[in-house]
Structures are given as structure tokens and as C-alpha cells.
Length: 527
Image (tube, rainbow, N blue to C red; front, side, top):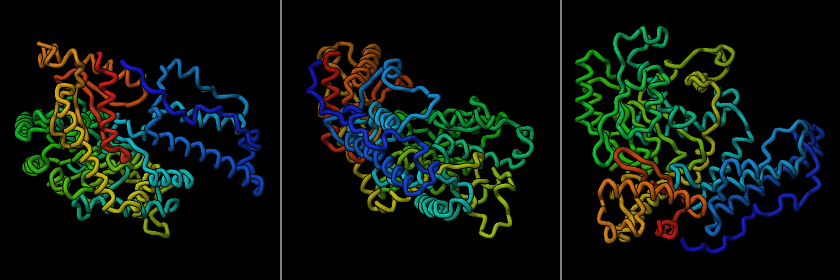
């Protein structure tokens, strides 16, 4: 493995206490809200927050500097030695807090770096970031219009627009703390729709075993939801997929017919549009036909792939028939690049959220308020209190308009196609497990020189694949130690470890894709 050129200096490598200002020796009690001596408290608070802002701006600059590393990796015990994590008995001064903030970012993985291809949620949208700052400043709960009037109306506007894009003419929506909870809510609502008496009497109100279906490539949250609502994971039936990772509708129907003949109660089908590993899209219309035929709730988990709805091109090819679904999970914090977290859940039928979850706590949800209480959203969900996840998305959408999001999505898909093309041109150095990705997931093995078919008679055998799996894990370790790129890996089904690169960062260009492929070769050629 050849030596890497010296890296550019990281601004966080400077002595954190080199510029102690007069505020450095002050304490929390010298700031708002504890200090209510307005002229003094205002001056101190402004100076402190300006210093915090400078730290964040330095981090943003570093994250967009391609000559900087994504991370300096330390094992957990080493990291503990570098950080002061203790909770003290006495208050710490402002300079200590500023150092803490610098250290937190200094050792953090730069997920907004153009060479970070590791996760579904990447990048750092600056407008969305500004929205998150404003959200934190407001620091309000989203359970009633009474305390969050502006943000509640923004939520209504954004969710209504999303339902229109899905094709729901009426319906209802909610933001949830992540796609996993959104999927679980969909399960709860589906059960409530079919068996409303369950809300009061529990499972004894249902005669027979409820059965739900999802593809073998489903997100684990679907099985987790089955466990959480008391259905049981063995009653979350996995439907076989084709070689591209898509649910096979004929296999789904066979399972439904069999379970009905056994006296069971099929009630829910999860159709994944953008699987976590393959990025596969289950066929919506054939699944919708089956759900309608047997009276089964049709949920679409578009947490990952939902961003493609913003593109007229990909909406037509990947989401034909989505309006036939009963519910849709869609996470703007993934392909759309909204800051974490921002997960939405949409229903075709209005009234189900409140009917299923309402507990009518009269200390929050009084019916005789002097405004329209339909804008009080807290009783629609089991969590009551909700974080304000809408403003950063609303502001980002305002900044881009539909046109900007469409361009963003088309660009990400074009870059993915470029990556696949470049891998094919490098022939034996990369082995694509799926040569026509449906989303921005690219799954592949890097093939070091000794395992290339020209040198390896065992090429394409099971032993060869197992060896590539070992190479993958070792190469990921080298990536982490080098800090120059990050790509995730996993085993899946019959395949041992393989890489899964993701392009969802607006900063990525073709040169960054080229760098990723070159760096894989630099780090892994001798393995």
C-alpha cells in the first residue's frame, strides 16, 4: 500500500485555548436565562453564541474541503483517553464548554464530506441546517396549535403537498421520529382499520391469527414493528424476491391463499420502494391488485426511495400506482438531504390516526378551546410530545421549489449511473452484484490483483466469493484508518461481505466518484 500525501491542516487541530476572550472565564449563570440583567446578559450571550457559531462554520468548511479527512479513527478506549467525558461536581467555565464543542466536532465523522459514501442519510444542506438552528431556538413542542401555531401550519402545508405528490386527494399525515416508527404506526392503523375493537379489548377481540407480509429484503423495522405491537415476528412473513431484490407478487398471493385456507387473517402487506441494501423497488401495481383482491392493507415503505417522487422521470418509472396504497412512509432526511431527522407517514383515509391513537387527555386536548382544535396533532400519535421536524424541511423546500428537488434527484441518479459505468470500464477490478441499480445504492466487491480472473483459476466460485468477503472487511478497516473515504459493507443472503456505496450528498461530483474508485485501488490492490 503506497504512502498518502500529507493531509491539509484541520482547523480543529489548533490549540483550543489559544484565544481566550473575556467571556472565557464566565459561567452559565452569566448568560440568559439565569442572568436577567439584560444589558450584561445580552452581551455575554451574544458573544458566547457567536463563538459557538464560528466553531460550527469552521466544521462546515472542513467538511467541504476535499483535502481534509473524513475522520481520524480511534478505538473506543483511545477515544475515551482523548475526551473529557466526566460530569463534574462544579460548573465549568465558558472556555471549557467551547473546547468541549470543538472536541465534539474534531473527532466526529464528517458525514457531509463529499467522500463519505457510507450511509443513506448524508450531506449537510445549509438551508435545512439554518432551519434546524431556528427550530432549536424556538424550542417548542408540536402537540398543540396553542404553543406551535406557525410550525403546525407549516406541517399541514408540507404534508398536504406530499400527499398530492403521492396521489392522495384527501387523507391525513404525521411526522414521526424515524421511518421505523412510521412503519410501526402504519401497522397499528391497519390493524385498527380492520379490527377497531382491538383498541379497547386487545388481541382477545380478534378471532384468529393476524398475518402480515413483507419482502425478504425488507427493512428490519417492519419485523420490529410486528414484535412491538404484539403480532410476533413469526407472523411477519417474508415473501421471496427475484434476483434484483424485488418481491415476487405471485409468491405473495400463494402465501395469502395458504394462510387464509389455514384460518389465519392476512391483513397487511409492506411494499418496499428502495430497499436498504439493494435499493430495489417492489412492484406496486401487481401488489396493489392482490391487496385489493383480498381486502388487505397496502403499505408502501418509501423511507429511502421516496425522494424519487420529486422527479417526474422517476416518479413515472418507480412509483406508478403509488396512489393505490393505503399508507406511505417517506423520509425527507434521506434522498432529499433534509437534516436528521425528518420522517413522514401518509394515509389515504382521513380520521384513522385520531381514531386509533386518541386518548383525549383533557389537560392538553380540550374541546372547548377558542380555535379550531383539528390543528392539535398530539392525540394522533402515541408519543404525545413531538419534536419540530418540519421547519428545516419547509425552509429547504422553499429554497429549492419543486424544480430544485427534481434537479437534485436527477443528478444523484445520474452520478450513480456514472459510477456503474466507470466500474464496468475498470473491468476485473470491480465485481458488480447488481449492474443496473434502481436507486443510488451500488453493491459490489473490490477485486484485488491476486483474485482477478486472469490470476485466479477459482474466480466466480464460492471460495472466491468468500475470499472477497474477507477482503471487503479488511479494506473497510484500511478506509477507517486512512480516513480518506467511507463505504459501508455487509453480508446479505447468499453473499458474504460486499460494499454498498450510497450517493445522497448534493456535494458529490464525478471527480468524487473517480476518487472513490481510485482510493479503493490504492488501499486494496495488495490485499
